[in-house]
Image (cartoon, rainbow, N blue to C red):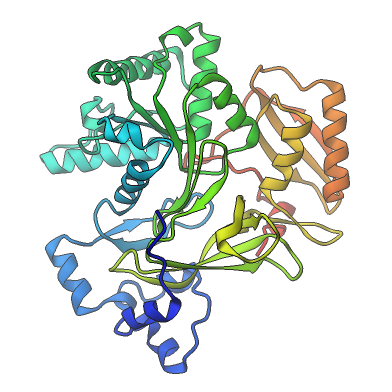
Length: 423
């Protein structure tokens, strides 16, 4: 799937008439492009006769990035840019292409913001106000994709919410000649739905998907394991963003493969000597807003510690959610997640609250709603102390609120925690 990677010099030839790059071209040097620089002078800094014509013809549009862990950023891209990237990967992926080829519907269980956006667009197209509770067809994105979630926090879904979603999934499944459908999801949202179906004795009604892709945020190992235990089908992860499309896909065993069509990647250590790398992307995949040496805000590790983007083994979370440790070094979500997965596999949602340079509290929920066993709690505290130098207390909670973006933050960023927010 990755036969179209381009060199940086090829890309520079394609951006010579874009105002934001003129100084770099004149100086022969391209500094890393940060998100605030993209916003400065927007959209004039990006405007060319070609872009103006595309906007006028409806071939390009203004959209906002999701803003999960940073301020929302306005960008310009072709309509359905991210969706087309998703569909191409789905249609070509060796583990799940069969469900594309069989014409399966894509049922999406993700943030309510995504559902509301689709309902608003559909209402605007029909010239009517957006409904407060859109019907299933009012939540249809296109011929292949429907959105299900109507509430911000999936932990607060009630029995009626779950029964409605199961009914809608069943209707889609039953309409397919082979009884198949493809489930697109935020992994936390799907895990909440599975948990609630099990707890409310509705699991027999849960229509089993033929394939699953999660593509919206970092998936903890415990969540992935939980989904694999209950869903007997390929579960694939996609890594990407609103502004870039998708860059990597996993296979059903969790190994990542590059999908760098019209892209060039660099990995730069987040700090000297670190094996965690910032992902710097040059891409002309979006012809109306090509990005040269753009800091995506994500970080990764490679199989051998080298800065080779073809050898990425996992993504570690967001750069802005790296915690700078008092003894030196940085703590990423992936590192904390390793310790939690090894010591306490029943932990579901978690959030670390630093309290000074050497102490922290870890709030957590569990799949079985019970606190972790004392031996597991001790083992986890020891791992955090050894790995991060933090004396970490554990606090079991019945509920950890989701963020206003519809996604979870693993690191509390208020007060002293904000100072440890990484690069």
